[in-house]
Length: 286
Image (cartoon, rainbow, N blue to C red; front, side, top):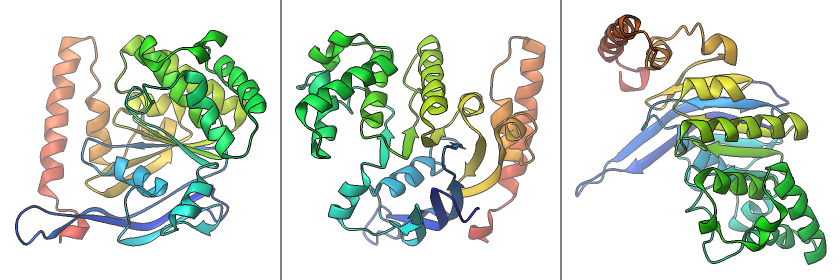
């Protein structure tokens, strides 16, 4: 972790109430530490339930940490007031997994994109000019601003969500499984777009996914999370091709290959690694 990190998470812990009458707290993050530098894309990868989305929601202020700190540009934002959180929205934006539910179905695309700009103080004329540029950036026609979200495909709606995140010119975007709800060809289009925008604008990103192949494509570095603990970090090329931790190795082996003989061998190796991993209790459970 570097001292000049744009986003700095140190020993982050999050717990949720359990079920039943006693409702014992269940900790889902066990002291997570990671950082995102200016202009850097950090891929955060793990299975469903690993705690990766909880990290993103904690950065956005959608869940309350029970321990640790979250710093943005050196400022502690772990427990800021709602008013301060609204001010942070200009610099920290989000792209959610489901592009349709994150867009107001009653508003036109133009209204959806101009609203955050006008909240930040832009005039309607300046906001509409900015929207035209945003639609061009995400490769949508200019007349898209007059249409409703339901008139677009899933991939187009996700591009609209990306445009909305870019509207206030943020320093950091939290991308929470932004392509997992899309088909493979549309995934490729959206990933290419995200990569081009990052290279052109230099915006930093915490890219959350369960797919090592996806984070390899868009990330500079990768952090792997398993049951609330970061188990491996490093350059994207190294972690996604020559992982050291058995859990990361099993994620890599989970990717299908065309050769049935090779696929069978990968499946058996993954089962072996899974059995080894289950035999070792995590440090926080000891």
